[in-house]
Amino acid sequence: MNTLIRLKSPVRRALLAALSLALLQACTQETKPAFSAIDVTGAEYARDFQLTDHNGQARSLKDFRGKVVVLFFGYTQCPDVCPTSMVELAEVKKLLGPLGDKLQGLFVTLDPERDKPEMLKAYMENFDPSFLALYSTPEKLPDLAKEFKIYYKKVDGPTPTSYTLDHSAGSYVFDREGKLRLYVRYGSGVATMAADLKLLLQ
Image 1 (tube, helix red, strand yellow):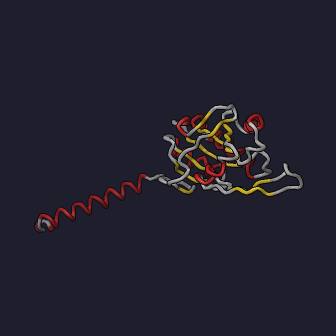
Image 2 (cartoon, one colour; image 1 turned 135 degrees about the vertical axis):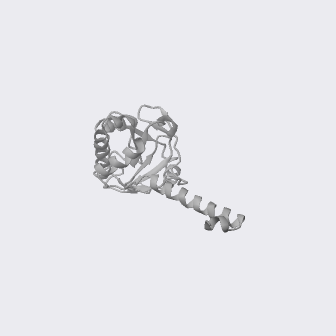
Image 3 (cartoon, rainbow, N blue to C red; image 1 turned 90 degrees about the vertical axis):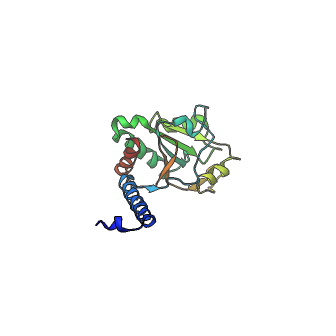
């Protein structure tokens, strides 16, 4: 006679429930995407923003529903990390082919005192005309940085306006529903990033 049948009903139900849970967990693990970037799905930060784009339009994450959003914090006078990150994002978009139309690149300035809208617009045109630069006021920037766990610090230069900024160098990735999914470290590589975004776009 079958072993399960010989067991008393409550014990049998408990065993069946445990087996069902194990099978469900196995299925979940099999279908979870294998991202190369840091999976931050469900994080309680970087949830949204209220900013202005370089065309003067108010923006929040809901404006980009249906697209995968890659958001990077930097400043236009950054000598290396910022332009490199934006160039790589433009290359990722090209690498994605037709799926690239569903990718939205966003650049948030950490230097609103110097990065005026016309400067931000010209800066974006160096990389991809569909990318948008966003800005806050100097007064609201600390709260925004706190929400996104972004570090930045002004480093004085020889003149009051020639300062630089030390800042976090990774990118946040939001899925097509506007939910935070990934944190991409600086230097991860174009092919690796494109593969992760492709998983979110398919």
